Image 1: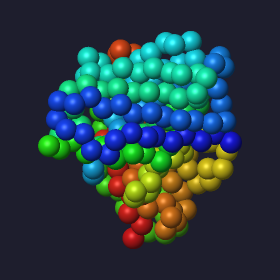
Image 2: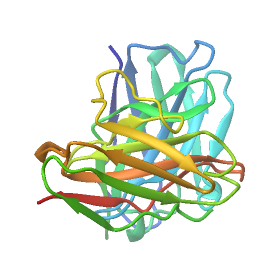
Image 3: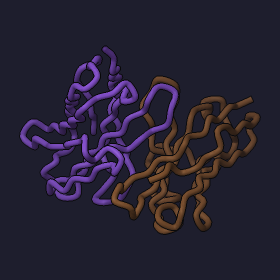
Image 4: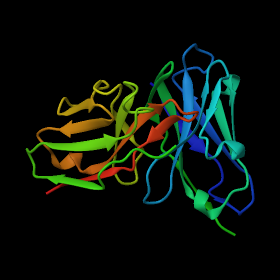
Length: 121
Length: 111
């Protein structure tokens, strides 16, 4: 079965760079059509899509955060990494990674449990 | 890219039907049949309930149904049950450079 799990720091300081890792099983990012995305949710607020990477290394980013985000994959390790630069307290949120249902069919059918990242000095 | 608009809250009694709306534009909801709906219980990850406007993933009860008219999509829960109390989010493909846009979220309360 498909599982995903996020890992990374729980606390980062303002201006620092956040690096989150999504480790998954049950599928391969070398298989045609597969995509993995990142979504975040500030406490008590709505979901916000951040980025997505496909099996062919096609990458998509939220326009409002594009300048701060980088998404990469390590197929051999079954991992997707998201980096976000210049962190600010407003970036405090639970960050989720998720599996896209099928090739360019926009919906996420499997989600990680999420990891809460707090930005504070 | 602006978030899709949902009502902040919807409530109903057990057994009743409720409908949650999700309003966008012709660049997202109205232009593509790529609307999905997610259910989120407190402290849990979202769960996909509907994709491509009206398709249910395996395991989702048929009490949940989706539809779309123009720039507005809808999620209907029939025969409301206590366990349906949760937050619900819509999402759509968007032709802007962003690919995905989520809704503002709706809290469903079972009275």
